[in-house]
Image (cartoon, rainbow, N blue to C red; front, side, top):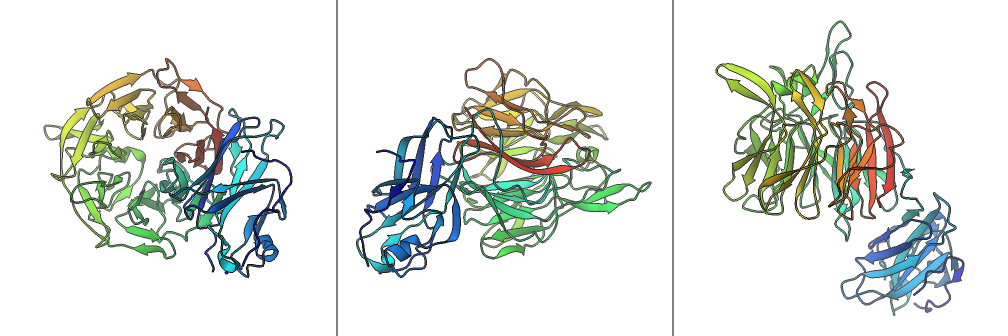
Length: 545
């Protein structure tokens, strides 16, 4: 089979004649975007064993291209293409969908003459024997494919609608490779951490980034602005948003600024927007909120630790996360839409990281804590890893990481191991950004140290690339309470001996959102910049080798 890169006439679609469909019911994704390289195109969620067409052209004609309806007289206004073309297109590919409703065109050659940034728009559909409105079915969304080299970042077609850091995000939908196709993003503030000499203005903005079209869709604003909060996807597709801090409050100087720790929660649902939930049992920010995937509480969310603030739940600066951390947990029941108390953590934890492991346990790593020496409470960084058993509904089997840390990055690797990267550690009176990186094997319960990163980094974006490599993007260096945001990006290859530096981000991005997308590209959006106490809405992508 061959991809035709110039005009090809749609003359062999059989004439026909009727039934209606909802446009954009199938899903289309391209893999590979380098000039002269190979690429694949995949359609899924199609009618089984149906004639299938993949079209490509060089422009968009959103909701105006009725070529199929008019040319074949189907009488169906849903027979509309989002791409230009008809009767000729830049490329046409055809075949029959599989029994499981998929169709792929693989090992297609992209011309080596395509310039950097060249845009190709794809769309697919199926054709059926009966005519009229039932003739064309299973239309996909359009897919924007942009030609990129592996050593250059490119701006997404749409930038984030808010310039924020310390936001929350979760993968809303995944593709055939189990990577992100839609990302839900919400809230944030002007910097990764609040200070008492600068107002901290939190955001209520929320949006969904569509990997296929590189566009953002508006979800409606959250009911409350918040940062340092969590967003968790439920099994039914709703998004639970809870806790965080809200500002700006206090000031102006010489009065200090502060933020308020929230106990409120809300839930987002497609078509309904945000609706309020009953308050959590505790005010908390910098907590974890993880979907329980097995056991009697499967489908519920374990919310653990966090910082509650002072007597009135006020936070005057980042250092207070050591003094007002929580050891309490609570569980959200998505059927009853209620929170109820969970088992206590073995220590207070704020700024920790949590992950559901492949062996069906929930692990919570590190964080800011405090230790008691007699009657005295001493702030400390935590090296504790504690495991929640979904069957006994308790924490146990505690382990110690080689390095105490808080505000770090973490990802599950393709082999099930967990990479723990950077963060803040050292002396609690003068904490530093960490360069230490460790791998944890859930099978052996052992930690293994990797060579240090070239620089220390807190608030890093950490992802597992499509080929299994570990990638660390952005973050902050220097004084953790006043970090210097970074542009740096590093990659670790399995079996390698050192970190490989990739192309720098176009601007500094600390405490933003980072994902490896379904098409294999690295995606970084928002974060604090190199300008004091300001954030960016920069949304960029990088092909990974």
